[in-house]
Length: 232
Image (tube, rainbow, N blue to C red; front, side):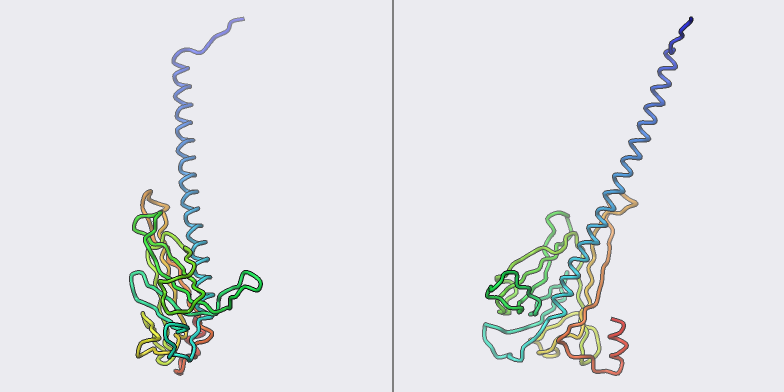
């Protein structure tokens, strides 16, 4: 019985075919892994947006002001929204949740939202939240600070005035035009930076937005208030 082995040429061709198959498999696997990473970044942005917007909604819905505007240094309730780049926001709210039984806490608290440079991504911002048990109209002092969202490009707030039925980029209850009353609603816009699924190394913007009605704010006084509130 004659047995014929592979020729050198056949071996070289077989090795070449196997190498080509291996390269195609590696490229397919690499592309699948890149797609998975992009989808994970998208999911992380979606999750961060949900968490941040839920926290903002909960705090803003229960924002309040007291009629006591003459107190000095202590218990001066305020609602301040600064039109910066990105925006800043601090106010008093009834959204505090007591975690421990018989702890000397109540539902009143002072919260501050602002941004700082993101340590995990160049050119991005991280959204921070500060909650202070002592209401002292000093948003930079005391309180527990926690990060809410990373990889942000922009944070923007707008406020609807219940007396004029117009939107404003800033709000200050210690000022003249908006003294001692809350906005009827706050519009929140967050813009995240995520990897571009079509071009490696490039970032694209993903916007998220919502509008929150404040429970303790005055209702809109103009004739178009009903349609405006329904749209929100």
